[in-house]
Image (cartoon, rainbow, N blue to C red; front, side, top):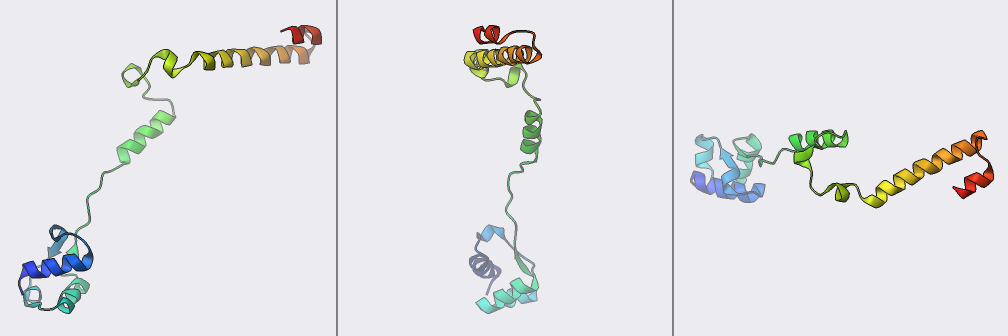
Length: 120
């Protein structure tokens, strides 16, 4: 049996395409006749499957880590207007909460009376 037949049988056994099978040429590989022979070649390490190449996520993870820290947010990286990125309602909520915190603090310190606090 030829090398191509060994490659085809090995691809079926290792559940991959023929292009991912590597064969070390030797007397045993050329003399292999049965599936059992091919199985023994795989066990012996004369026939093996090449690992698939994947897409590395290293740079993506590094960029994401920086974005979490507030980097990479300058003009060229922005999508959307100022109001889309920072809505008016959200800005108003921030302002009001800060003011409410302040008047509560003033009331607790006794600088303003309860009546004034409720007015505000």
